[in-house]
Image: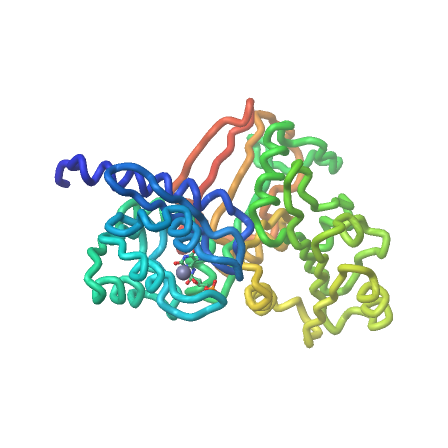
Length: 371
Ligand code: AOF
Ligand code: ZN
């Protein structure tokens, strides 16, 4: 480790600002990444911008427009390698070259195979100094969703659950209102706002009749996705009608009655995805289909069977657990009834843990390590 020089600290300071800008569009850019850009001259920020939504201008374009002619000779800080391809918008590397910037500081290489390395190469060929890797770890965390989806074709899945300190999601009589406190439940709405899709099993819908919407003032409802192989869901279930904006997808199989498929299909904003199998809904295929639709992040809220199966199949990336300081004992259910590990040495483990207290509940976040 070498001492951080003042210029490295300055670079980190401006990149931190660029990451802060990128995060403003959390949950709004799929299938594109979160990208922020800051243009700096003589240690002063002269232009800022971030990518707002797929199909609209990239971060660099906003920041360059804000800086105007002043951008000539300046340094651009970008949280992701500037693009070099013609997508829905022209290459940002070219825009930076045209603006005559002197130096470009990049947090991480773009994992998109259409770009990966070619953006920085183009800048260097034009005589621009490129420094790669400033706050790389933070940038990778900011774009953990995009990184997973663009490299694997699968969505990034976070599993959220609340349990008592003795690992129960309900008492033995089935009472579950409420396990976690109000502030933890409020945070769940922030997650719903940030993720493209909310996923639950049909049993959860039948038992709890949830709306699965986001109840924040400027929040966005996620797409509601119900895995319901036998199409047991009732037409009056709240999920089917609770959102005025976002679709409700029901994933089912050939075990569903075709008459019921048609009835549900005819409801507004409801889609039935019927997989040609007599067995279970093919989960990996379903997840890949979400990405093909441009939905790259999933908030899994239960139930225990579905969560266990997804975990067993290594499809979950991250966990957000709320642990209430309570005991209920007895035979109440646990959050991962569908996971069947036989030897403790084979337990699924989390790493990169972080903890905080939500006015009394312990909130644990971690990444599923490969098992
Ligand atoms: C950047 N800055 O702000 C974004 C980038 O369809 P397009 O034209 O929007 O291109 C999308 C791809 O461009 C995306 O997959 C990623 O590789 C890059 N996104 N790049 O330099 C930005 N949003
Ligand atoms: Zn671009």
